[in-house]
Image (cartoon, rainbow, N blue to C red; front, side, top):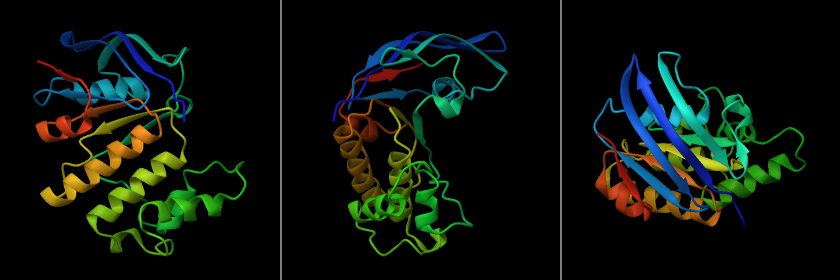
Amino acid sequence: MSGVSLTLKDIQISLHGRHLLQVNTRIEPGATLTVMGPSGIGKSSLLAYIAGFLASDFSASGEILLGERCLNSLPAEQRGVGLLFQDPLLFPHLSVAQNLLFAVSRHVSHRQQQVDQALEAVGLQGFGDRDPATLSGGQKARVALQRLLLSQPKAVLLDEPFSRLDAHLRQEIRQHVFQTLRDAALPTILVTHDVEDAAASGGPVITLG
């Protein structure tokens, strides 16, 4: 599968006139860039700027390019950028299958078949009718990842997505996520405090601050 690169061209972010960060880099398809640094340095703000929902308190400049396409003037929903957070953020009022269907375009045929295949790919076949509240932490993380992939992003942003998992599960889910994103040729940015997350991603590391 061929993907596109994500280029951050002289990105600078400030908060109330205080300079937070400057980033100038390119992430190739299937590669993961890890961004580390203390709390408050602007790691999550960088992701928000790329995704298109940076709060108005911040001022930011620099180009965000996905392939040859500049994202700066596009609303968040048109940028083709997927996000995974600390919390899986599954909709509690929807079943597992409905959570996944939410990500599939209504113009796509065989939507239910795509959902069934997505669940089977992560060993959760037969879980479609389940209430998300009945899933384990690892199962919720897998469903969140599959929902992201079904939305067909061109790049992925990971904001400490493993931090609430216990050590054993963290290693397993982390490995699964990075391998899946590599296979899908998606350029990825990971924000984390954990050096093991950075090592597992197998890509370059930027330390801010």
